[in-house]
Image (cartoon, one colour):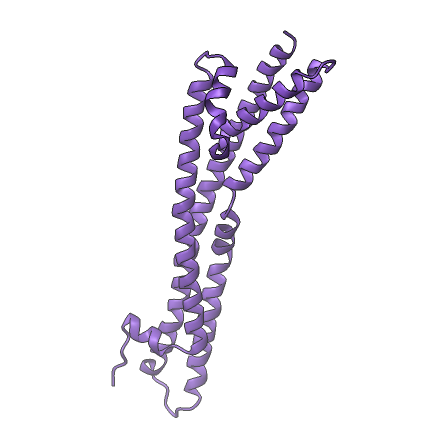
Length: 224
């Protein structure tokens, strides 16, 4: 008597624990792929915004003019534009106060820009920890389902007088599906996490370099 070893029949015939493990891994995989695509869109937009703003910033125009062009959309600003508007606004406010030391004016603007930079990085790093968790734990969750399924398969052999490969094969096969699903969830998450972490780090360096260069410009203006 041959056993039905098709993929769906193996899942349907698996024990409740193994089915729950498979369901959990499927849900995690769907969430992981959703976050992967969303994060890809977020980072692509962040790179495009940074490129566009830097072109405008270094075009040689007046900073006050650029500020008045950009600041009306302050609620929508992200990345370099947000850092610039916050820093220039704080610089202007402090610079207009009589008796302020030029260095304290620049340092005040820098502090405000550092706060915005930190918030921008927190936004860019959203969901990366989830991808890291999926990548590191999914194989072990799948392995748990595999161990449980194989254990049940061998326990079932204790109730028969003559064990055959046909008896144990379905139990082992359904158990190994859990391992495969764990790897299917983990591998894309690990690849995406490594790639996006590198992208976020590059953006952070870009933002930080801009902040320092902009601070130098403000320092020259403060002494004028």
